[in-house]
Length: 380
Image (tube, rainbow, N blue to C red; front, side, top):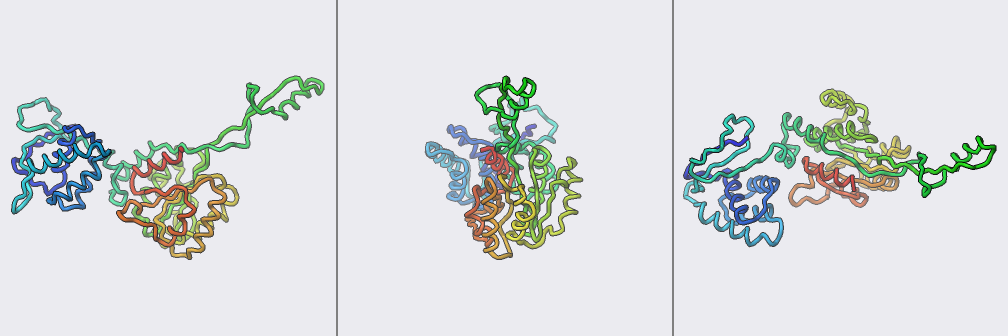
């Protein structure tokens, strides 16, 4: 529901929302399309610049709001007009001097009558939906309520995944398929050994197994609590999903996470993980997974998703050896690293550097949006 808020004639814009609200309106009037997701990114970027510095704000907007080179001239015109005409740098504070009415998305506001146009100033609809904000927010900054809300969104992410040929076959009527010799021979017993009836078969496709290996060491604790909920949502919505936690030991948690009651699933899973927020021996625990489960078939032909920041207290040679083994038997390896979103990030951590040559996809894992990207990769 939209809540009208009347601004003062002189508005302190030390808070980024004032620049975001006014400038995006200018951009849209200049014909530049600005989706809500870009608006939120721009708003978040203002927290990392000097908000009274024209150049800082200019480049923050240009890097987040301009989606094609053709929009740059319109962006420049809009920014110049907005900054010159509506922003004044005073000695004590920066002020926005245009009076405007802001429409803020607020479900708790009871007055839904926005038809009164008697208010002076311009009505700027800014509907930052709760789900849009949660999609982009870093898991490390979630509170408990947001974790619960995010879980509901996680359940809507469909991990369809690719398929693989099954050994099982089914009979088909079309004659352009492979002859079913067993079916023909069995039928011939009813006709004195004469193969009168013809049968054909085709191999069935089956969903490719997805195996999650979640790092629950101390450095991953703030992300593991959200990622564990994502894995639980995947297990209850898709067949052939397996889950393990890795830290100083390997723990299979597929059964625990298969409980559809989230609270119960989290409780019994936490009780089974004895190395939560402990140390990290990634190479050794991946090797343990391969020895106990991988070579027996669980990882063979599967998509293996490792969720870790790559910090490993073990030897890099062990990590290299075990990742090479995993690469040989799996279909592909996807590594999700929440630290990848950090500006200037380079995969220099010992475990991460050793694993990188064997990874097929290397993506962020700090937000719901990055998990949506994972779902898209799995369907390719």
